[in-house]
Image 1 (cartoon, rainbow, N blue to C red):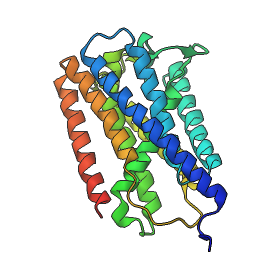
Image 2 (cartoon, rainbow, N blue to C red; image 1 turned 180 degrees about the horizontal axis):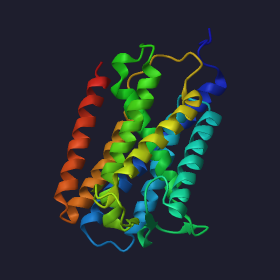
Image 3 (tube, helix red, strand yellow; image 1 turned 90 degrees about the vertical axis):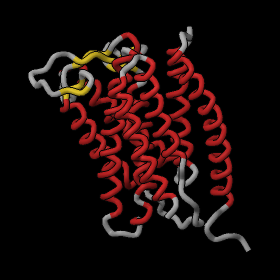
Length: 273
C-alpha cells in the first residue's frame, strides 16, 4: 500500500531537493575554506570567492527549505525577504534611514542603479532564513507550546541583530560600507546603535510576513533536527571572526567568539532534546 503521507511528485521533489542541497552544501564547504584562506593570505580573486560563497549560501539555504516545503513557498519567502531587506537598504543608502548615515564602498561589488549592491538582498535572505532555522533548533524543547511561533520570530530577530554585530567589523575590514559621523556618540566599530535596532525590527517584520509560507501544512514523516542553519550561521560568524583576527581587531573577534559559542550551546541543547 502507498504511503498516504507522500505521493510520487512529493517523493520526486524530496529527492531532487536533497540532491541539490547536498551538492550545494559540499561546494559551499569548499568555498568556505577558500574564503577563510583568503582572509589570511593575499589572493587575487578574493572578492570573487566571497561572491561565490554568498551565492552558494543562498542556494543551500533555499534548497534546505525546499526539502520540506513547496517550491512556490520557498520562492515567496525568499522574494519577500529580498524585496523588503533590499528595499530598506536602498532607502538607507538614499536617506540615512532607518540604519543611520552610511555609504557603500568599493569592496561591496557592483551597485545596481547607483543605489543598491547586488549582494545585499542575498545577504538578507541568508541571514534571516538561517537565523530562523537556528531559532527553531534552539526552541525545539518548546515546539508544542502555543506561543512557539512568536518565540521563534522574536529569537530569530535577535539572532539577526547579533549576526549584524559580528558583520559590521568584518564589513569595515573588507570595505563593504562606511559609516559617517552621527550626533549620537554610542557606536560599535563605527556603526550607530540605531543600525542594530533597525536590523532587528526589520527582521521581525519580515519574519511575521513570511512565517505563514514557511509552515509545513501537510503531514510529514517525523525527522530529526535540521542542522544546516546552525552550520551556515556559525560559518558566517567564523568568517567574521577570522577577518577581524587577520587585521588584529581582537575586541570584535572576541565578541564574535562569544556569540558563536553561546548560539552553539543553545542549538546543540535543542538538537539533543
